[in-house]
Length: 302
Image: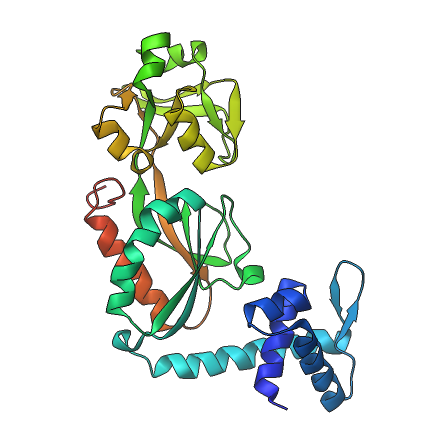
């Protein structure tokens, strides 16, 4: 029995609340995970887990053993990481980000990163919500906007500058708003994944202006927001990187230039630990340098 592998399976099964999910992450089968945990229980002579229909529950012995396993696995990983320099970044980096940001800002840069660090593989999970990093087994997440999770460490690596934008066809038909207040007379595309939902915020001469907007379409998908704007459906506030090329080509137009939407910071987020492997720090440094050169996401001088 490989006790270290069994411990890893035990910890990840509990964190993910699923033998099957732990098996998929480790590229093995659910029966293998079950056998490993059963082998641990036989070796220790105690029951570690009880199952209900929806949850894996730790016994009292299981809770104590789980804490020790976490410490042991972290110590092993720390020992391995202590031998790594930046030039020795290795392993699979499990990375999370939002869907459209991943497609437009992360994936196009991956070939350069992998060429620089050929021993690192990227496992990218994209979702338009903040995923549980422990449950999903993520090493690193790129998040846009502020968050309050004190269990995580955040490093600011850029900024999402936003614009008020619609298609030129929409403005020809409906006119252009000259002030934020005039947005209440327009069809506005609402992105429901934001905490403010239909309350849009602008920097004006006298401070922040908050406007409640409405429209015939709302969505929790940034991809759908982009498609709706390009389909002449209405006005959106969106990151300029979502539409930069379309704006330059004249398909879309930015309005309310004197009232800039409040920008959002971009953070690299990872779990608190006594250490972190080189692959994580290398990727954070890589994105920070890449974003510094890109005016749409650069935090330099802000």
